[in-house]
Length: 349
Image: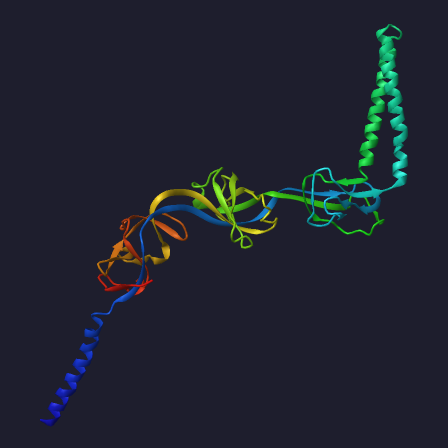
């Protein structure tokens, strides 16, 4: 009998221990954070990456042999250097070759041009008065025209001694030569880039080919410019799919007025394919995927209420909710992981 009483006492204690946690947990509230659902804008976009290149780029080589002389940049007061901005036509480098200049005989060509011009004008005046024949006038005109061609040709040949900027842009390559060193023809002298407008080539997945079109806007971002977003547009796209990568080629033009992006940088692009100005939009990371569908929790009279929702537009961070939520619903954004329908909750900041 004593043993039986002992066993009954132990059983009663165990039952009491098992019941107490339940009683204690009845009034426990799960701490959660909430936001009030308000209409906002949302964009559907395709994220992609690529390398930017300048729209204008030119490498200039020497056309003749000459002694190297790097000229002074008038805007800085020092010899031209990497990173300097130049305007089209600015003289950057001079190649000196006195023998080459003498062989052109510019002074005599200028004098010949002046004399032939005077002769032609005199012959024209005499012809008007009947003093010379038409043939004599034409011969004088031919001589004047030939003198103009010879002088122009000489100026073109002399211009080869000067390396002038072919475009307005920034010096990105400037090989070093000791002043006075003889530089051979066809040697790279300077490389210029205008990257106020950039170009980017993208490869997009085959599934996107029917949503991409010429003229669509694209946002461009880079880790070096976290506070700035550049704008671009799709300029060309290929209708063909690469059978190896199952992708198609897209070309993008980017406005870079502040020169924030540099040629060769790796950039992220977001191609905007659809947008809404006013919609119920929630973060994707609060959505629970369950057998019954995608669900979220809202707070109603101090209790968690599970809602099954349907999607509209979406992007990697957010989704439009087209059913299951209403404006002004109090949506749980923190603490939802352990909630059950009708759980008691406590709203905290």
